Amino acid sequence: MTTDLLVQNVGLDFPLYHGSARSLKKTMVRNVTGRMASDEQNRVVVQALRDISFHLKPGDKLGLVGRNGAGKSTLLRALAGIYEPQRGRVRVQGSLNALLDPNLGMNPELTGRENIVLRGQYQRMDRAAIRRMEEDVSEFAELGDFMDLPVRIYSSGMVIRLGFALATAIRPQVLLMDEWFLAGDANFLEKARERLEDLVRGAEILVLSTHLSSVIEEWCSRVIWLDQGRIRADGPVSEVLAAYLAPA
Amino acid sequence: MGRGRRVAGEEPIGYRHRTMDNAAIMSPPQTIFETQAGADRRERMRSAMDDLLTAGTMWRLSWTLALLDIKLRYRGSILGPFWLTLSSALTIGMMGVLYSYLFHMDVSHYFPFLALSIVLWNFMLQMVNDATACFISAEAMIRSVRLPMMLHPMRAVLRNLLILAHNAVVIIIVDLAMNAWPGWIGILAIPAFLLWLVVSLAMSLLLGALCARFRDIPPIVASLMQLAFFVSAIIWEPSQLGQHEWMLVFNPVFTLLEIIRAPLLGELPSLLVTFSALAYSAIIIFLASMLFVRVRGRIPFWV
Image 1 (cartoon, rainbow over the protein chains, first blue to last red):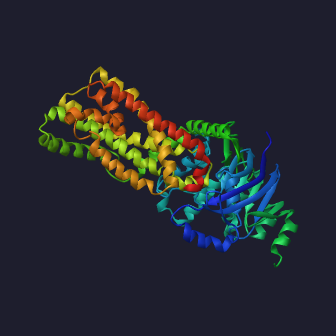
Image 2 (cartoon, helix red, strand yellow):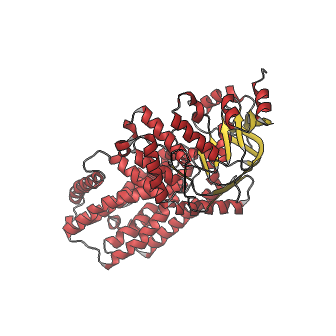
Image 3 (cartoon, chains in turn cyan, green):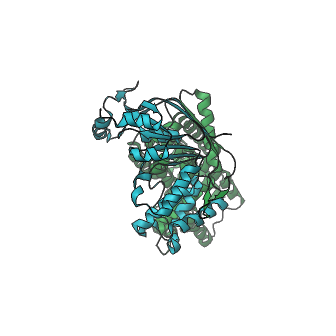
């Protein structure tokens, strides 16, 4: 089966339920003005995504741009199958890995090895594959004897190396990436950069969310500009970026 | 409401060698899923079923998580999880002496009863409390990777099973000391315990989902459980109620406890008690399945 990612008329509302809803509301209003609404049961909801459609095939490298609160992260989570949309549909064919937050599933109380095993099991790898991942990650992250000590006592450099090695050890056909991952590019070690490039090039479909145009220019072949949960523009990198960066 | 499908396909595609430095890079198994809005009841039921089956194939992950929960709690302590055993032994020892005196009961009869009751009750109590938190406490995980929702109740049940295994040591020691083996009738506790596991899973789904949505429920549940401890014939024996003993069948905590405790004490639970326990279980399982089919896809928005 060919790798394929289909998004049709996706709409997604965020209900605001809990005690913090009011203060959360205030903070969100700044970014999402005009998107607060009430649903049929009079609950307050934020319309995080509205009428999103696109279709990605092998070779497509999509960049998502938009200011904070435009819906980029929510869209990535919907693509990863974490949030199920209330309207429309998302269909993913192919192995998928979503690099959404830097500490994804990493528990500082657990040892490096335990964290690696857990990540492998999240991805439903078998024992042999997990063992290979252990070797690969510990070698890259240069953890040595620290593998069997809790991550809590690692130096910050070791934590970053472990997180990075873990995230890049899994090579999916569909790769979803949030911008944090490429943000520290300037100081990246040469071998880290090599590994990351390898991962991105190895993915058949890439969806990358960022507001750094340099990252988009380097990695993407198509850009979607999200604004207040809607697609404002969709097309080749140069066109959309020019419109996005143009003074309003 | 969304529809979710995830089909485990091929095994990991093996590993490719990188051209640059020969480091191995793993590829996760094929994932196919579809999340779709506006699905009808049947579709929702099918995706709930899918969730259940996928969780079943991922039992190893929930086992690892449960094991790590326990390990973490006791990492660095000398006795480790056997602190659980020790604290249960202390509670039972103290209460046994005190209450056999207060109730004027024969120690060799009361101790085995109390040891069983306390250990089983602690499982129930902890299970219900963990159930209320099973989705809320897994928030980070739920929001970072697509996993079957059923995985979290499984983790809670397995964790409590591990704790129960440590506490069961106390029952065995008391039974040895008091020479109070239940005999063959004790085997009846096995099907009853299997029922407990299913009910525990259902309870975790039910309370876990409700508590994720309505945050007032955990304290309500906690105070109800405190009440249940006193009214469910845990430290006192059902026969002490005399002619009012029949009223106990209206208490689900009691009947569910009794179907395991009675056989392990060498007695047959009454038909009425057995029937009530089955009826309460059926209700819990039914409610949990209904709720799960309805709200499975909403849980990530609630936690």
